Length: 142
Image 1 (spheres, helix red, strand yellow):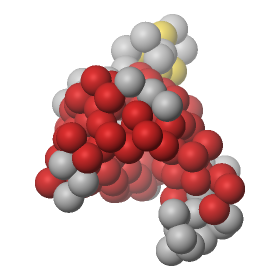
Image 2 (image 1 turned 180 degrees about the horizontal axis):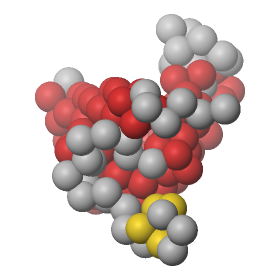
Image 3 (image 1 turned 180 degrees about the vertical axis):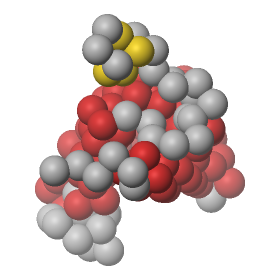
């Protein structure tokens, strides 16, 4: 059973923590790996065009900020899932623990699940732009 008095605050905490994780993922690519370094990784390790570095970084940074603010959080969470599924796919062969050589897959998997929870359960309290209501008082994804 869902406690409707406290659930919005739990979802708020999850949404902000998830947004911070997405934001830090994007900023790590800018300040630690560097944009050219991440572009090289995409090309050399994943076989993707290096120009995708900017859209991936932008998705993570902008998506993280939107999640933190609660601006269309449900939709943003859904749109970010394919980005992290790509990371999950890369890390699968490395094993479970993220501290393993090359990084494990549990962290990307957790971010996918947390994104799904926000998409399914809602943005929680203090959202700047929550999802629209549909008849019956429920929130719609669009």
